[in-house]
Length: 254
Image (tube, rainbow, N blue to C red; front, top):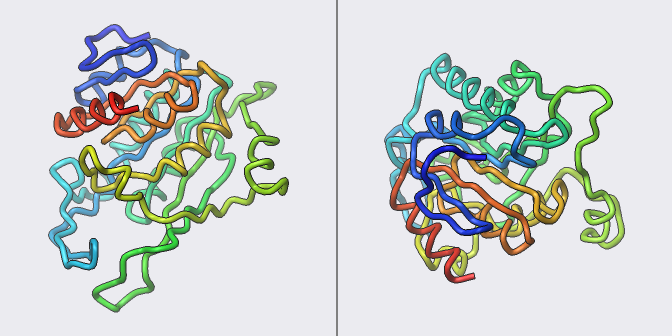
């Protein structure tokens, strides 16, 4: 599965503290059932935003610094290429992003022989206001769901589970939830932490119990917490030790 050394390891929850490109190369071909990725948005440009009613700097860390269009797309093509290699033929990949990076990701997926299944719009019911008052309020993120572009290979979609979650109606591609609840950040905060509700839905939609899920930019491991709660197995990769420690604390409090 993984030939390197784990930072933290249990039967169902494993963390790799390393650069994503170095570590993912040590994961065996076609060993992963599903991938969820929330890669850098590359929007840390010394601007300002609103958080908790306060004006704050948008900078999130060195990992999120703005790149040129060419460098950003090269980055996306390279990590997505590795995801294709480690993903099983009947697996699928979900990638979350904003306008700053999601269009490059969509192109990189197709360039690496993925086929996009759905374009999910995550609508935030309580987005922060737009302080500049020069654009519409940013209240959505995009989550692309894709599979390998292979004929006669079926991917997992638990249609009836999604229908049941949606009052016995077909689930649409617009999902409305609040921002991540404070209770989900009690072990520490990550600047782009996703709500458990979103990851629960993704995992229930496209995996089975005991499936192995990879998150190559795991942050505080919301994907992993959701996976373990839903009886799946998880590998998370991140190059920030602070977030590795938050991930461990969250797992130990399950």
